[in-house]
Length: 254
Length: 106
Image (cartoon, rainbow over all chains, first blue to last red; front, side):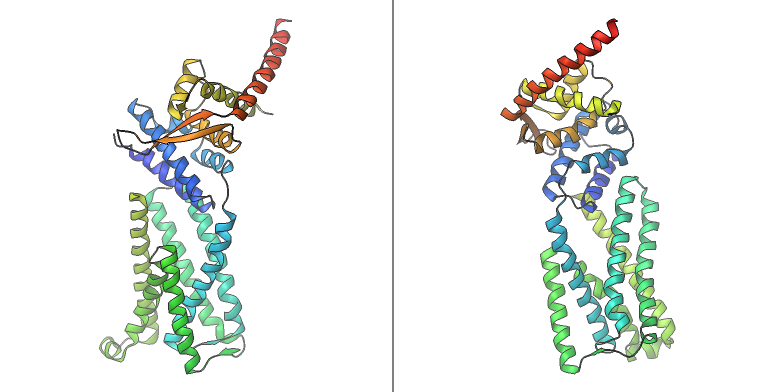
């Protein structure tokens, strides 16, 4: 017998909550499967998921999470990989545009900004899962998060020249070497993490901008630089949103 | 200790007792508890307790796949340590229930 939509949603949210709480994969699968089995049996006898979970789903999820092991080792592994990947991503974009030349603001600002953004995203996903937010609200919150990310990086890019001259500049050979290393890093992380994100993200962010600035295209559109920035940001935003939706859907099907 | 914590402790002891009677799984445990009169317990509340009992090595889990499909079912059996814990619970409970009875009688 198929589970009711409500039960399925609860199980999905529980999984998301436990993943964003840094619990061990195996323990997450264990408890989600066990609850699925229970819900199936209960629904066969006409019981409703609210009666089984009791109180608030949020409280129940907290309760379960409290009894599970947090995977500190995995977190300590993922965080540096994430930071290195992010640096490769930023370097790649700068290479395409103007070569590597960083001011102090960028050298410090990028890693700090990305860590803050990452915490905001994780806390939001966890909050959405615990409070059983509907799909429409989820989409709005996600869109705002993506906008927030793009916005904070655009701010950094606009601000970078206000804080002194570049302190880290590479010549052409240096740029090539960084470019090759950055690409290899992103591909390796993509294989390691078994996701397309490390490859897709640079693609979505840089390709629209580069394409719009190609002489052949620019002559035909006749757009100013500012228009180009807006249009390419819009395309990037759309691509990322579609990507997130696809990833979510495949996750749900698992 | 508030009343829900007290109930948790009691529930844990009763779960051990149910598992001690022979291999069983989550849904069956709650059905058994309900036939004994535990109607105040939300079904889901046994799972955090089962997680803790598993971590404390009071119970062991074996998975068996079901002919009807769905995820494999987890069957629990009690360990030696679980039996010891059950004896402790029985003794504590006898003390508490005895004390409560005395208070209420007078």
